[in-house]
Length: 100
Image (cartoon, rainbow, N blue to C red; front, side):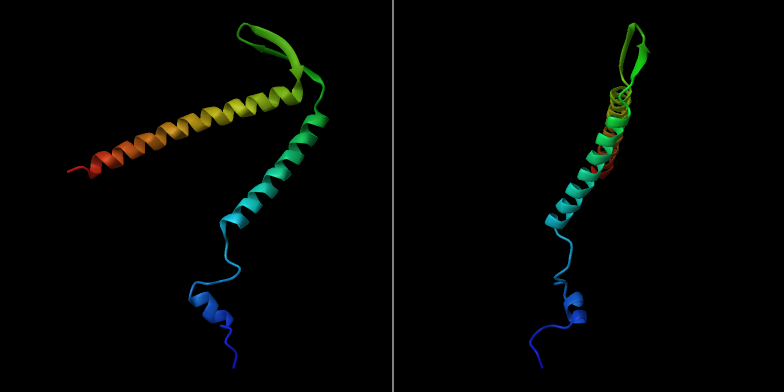
């Protein structure tokens, strides 16, 4: 008989040697970011032609990839602002409801 716990014993007492950790989560994040960066580089390399842009009183041209990336970043920023405001609203409501 060995002193090593069996697989079922290891899983039931919560000491799984293959469990997820912060390091494994960070590694997954780094790999995902690298893949996204690679896709971004390919996107920029394939869309270098100039596009004519007009917005209100601004008129000009810029590479298509830059224009699309700027539009995406502005969309993400607006979504983040609205989401943050909603989270703050819900937190205030929860705090208000918890007070006696």
